[in-house]
Length: 195
Image 1 (cartoon, rainbow, N blue to C red):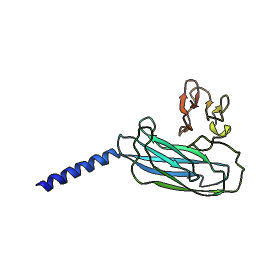
Image 2: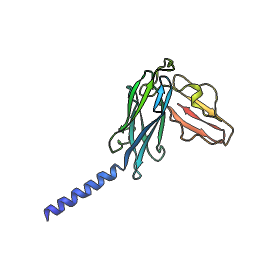
Image 3: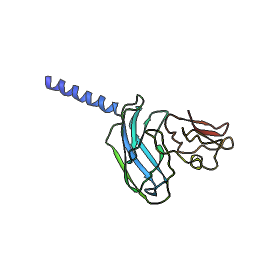
């Protein structure tokens, strides 16, 4: 009888542990898989949502730089970011669970993707914010029919894109670097990243 009680308690504890890790690392992909040095790649990270919980994760670009994010009701995945490699080579990207802003780490094992960077366009020397990917170029932050409104702040990465009121917002939504926050206002025809 004592063994049955201990076994039941272990099964209940395992059930609670499984429900606590209700979101698992899903996948990480890079596009295009081959680029020239200095050209951006798009990295898409997914979390498999198994319940209403939330979790944190980090994407490691394979060149010593990384970015952290999290998944919850207000920040559903996929998490999409861009990155620029300065030197040719083959880079192994990875995505793994991390404690981020009070979000516990996502469960499951790390996921990997590979990008090959060839000789090519010379990358302009930039100093990205600590822990963030290289700064986007001004023309790359707004996608037609959206246009840059004002200037891109090259120090913080802050910007505003504008279009006719009611214009459909980009999908997926941009990911803001560093401490910037994404904002949108369809009535004014604006979106972007600001402090």
